[in-house]
Length: 384
Image (cartoon, rainbow, N blue to C red; front, side):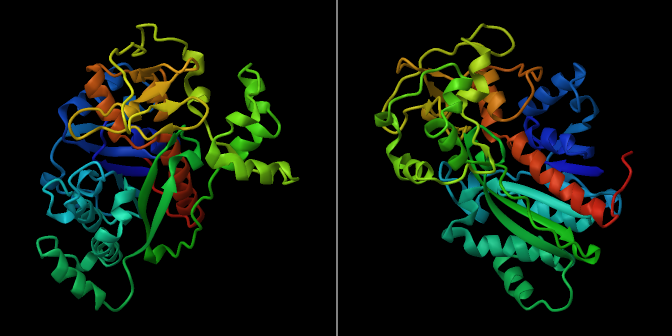
């Protein structure tokens, strides 16, 4: 299946979609360091990456009409800072807001489907009208005029009649529910071209907190797997006590897989060795609001940071209670990138790229849903 990706970053979304069967005709990213990371891995022949046609360009300068009628998917993660709690939250007034460019790409190329990812802040009440503008613009993309003030266009689209161009669904997801070893709440804006007649339920979560608690505090399988003694009940996190009590009172084992914990994700790497991006970064410390990720839960969401990498989200708490920064290799594990995927830049720059990335685990699950839905309706294009 053929796709074009905007705002590719260091390749998390592209990796997940590639694993789901999408072949990229074009990938666009403006940040030179992120492009250098992809080019570095492409030159090394890393699986999937070797075929990624990445270019460094501003998406506002790209004409997508040359892809008209050729694409199964347009995907991307428009910059999240305009809607992030960690940013200035200026929404459409932020010069970094690239949703108009994402919508224009769909209008010009008319893919069979699209997938855009953003922070959960996009679904905040403060941005409700702008999210409505996004969804209505995609539903009636043939009527959009990107240069028109968004409030004026929204009122016009609210009065739109006739068939929609795309059926749009907005999903609020936690990447941990789809196999990523981090609590990462995101908003996905997905759609299928209306004339395809696709009525497909989004994928259900594959992993759950309840199953992790079962494995930890009912069966004990989690501790056995890690060759650790089961902790005393006094160490059950306060927020989990009631759920554990219910599970112990005879509930059936949840059918999902357990959430993947930080220990699950990185324990086999051992202590930082200095090789393969598994390099110790000194200086980690605890201070109010920055306490690090515990090993036996999914990690906190990696963050890029407005003024550098914040400490709490990119630290781990070791078994002895001490803290240290995640290495780049450990952070790449959290984002689902393979161990042979290298980051040639500094620790801070690499962590910035990883903090901005889409978890490949989530991207693969959603990508397979999109691909399977298109395959069932027979709307699949051969990769070039």
